[in-house]
Image (cartoon, rainbow, N blue to C red; front, side, top):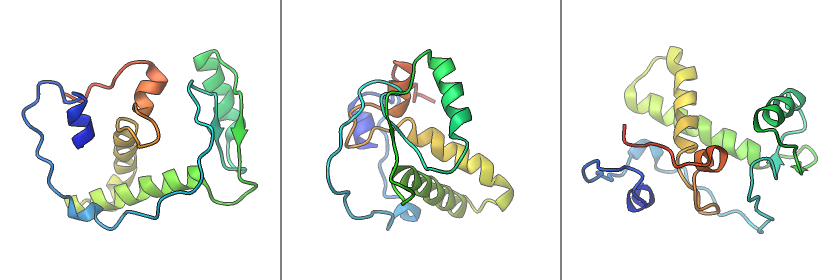
Length: 143
């Protein structure tokens, strides 16, 4: 949040109050090891699980972006980046539901909200947001 505020992604909003969110405490894991080649363009590198509807996903994305996939990185069936991202989504959703005392019927909306947030927050490895990389413009976080 501090980084987002520093980069001006909150626009003219008043000072953002950066309190510690207790439901998110304890989510930190050990730092990843090794550095891999970073993609610089959409579809340059896609991480995928071996199982799943990858053919449909690739067809839709390649058609939408009018680009072809350059590299598909797998881990021969072991858990890796896509599983880690899914775990992050699940942890965020559980924390949000617990904090707001929401019934299980809000699970789908909470997952979508977590994905929305993650797509608009930069990571340490990439200086811009996934939204910006995909759409070519900064996300509007002004509310």
